[in-house]
Image (tube, rainbow, N blue to C red; front, side):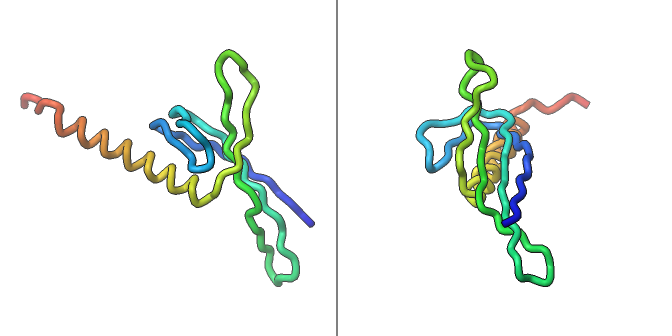
Length: 103
């Protein structure tokens, strides 16, 4: 069985929560790790996602410590979409309330 991992970073502009875990996580950058395995027997290379993890740091008082939390890829996409929508709504609201510039 051939496996591979890919790492990427996502940025949350707002605090967010994951269904499987209690409490909210603060806004910031988070590392995502995706693990996949090669499906054999096809005439082309096909990979199946087997796991998605979100790396969560504990605190500034314990630098270097992090927790690897298993998350659903679908939930991660949904949470990122909500975060983007909240940020866009906030920006639109702030723009609507700002005074017009004198021309």
